[in-house]
Length: 202
Image 1 (cartoon, helix red, strand yellow):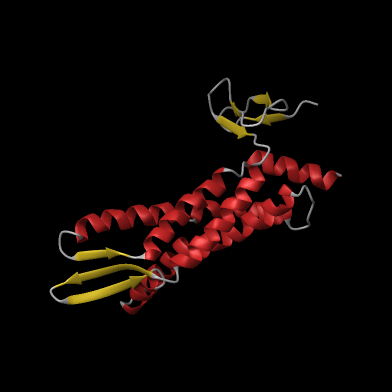
Image 2 (cartoon, rainbow, N blue to C red; image 1 turned 60 degrees about the vertical axis):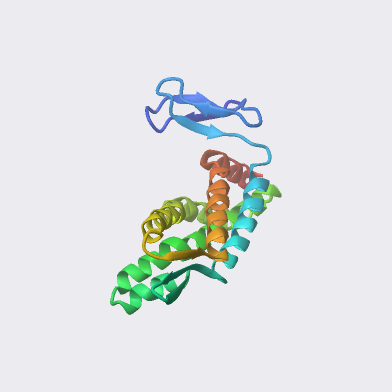
């Protein structure tokens, strides 16, 4: 049976029914990415999502960075970052930071597991469609990698002025950002919707 997908760039219909494991479909007209098929995609998503949850818990349980300068020492945790902004009279920025680096990523991880576990078991669940809709809307708002890049850039400048000790939380969040990105990358939107519709029609 032919399964056609429309290219997001030029609307050309392409048959992607014969994709082998690990194959990527690109548009022959404009070269745009269409979909990637992996037999074990959902098992990969589940494994990396669970590992991400563990790393996120660790990242919120230990010191993130410690600074020492002129005999004074300051310890920063991940949770204290929005708290410091709140104390300095910036509640909106405090909420946004907390949302982008902790709350939204945590919700996205929950949605990933809620979708990937049933799909890995090839079982239909009533929440699959609403969870998938919410996930694909929210995933662009999880700015985990942006936060890590900002921290690294800041460290380069701070190291010239103070002694910086990198804590367990920093490495845990760095691992979390990699695993989180890997989990999202393995959930192909087209393949996800295709399997949800297939399971619901059985």
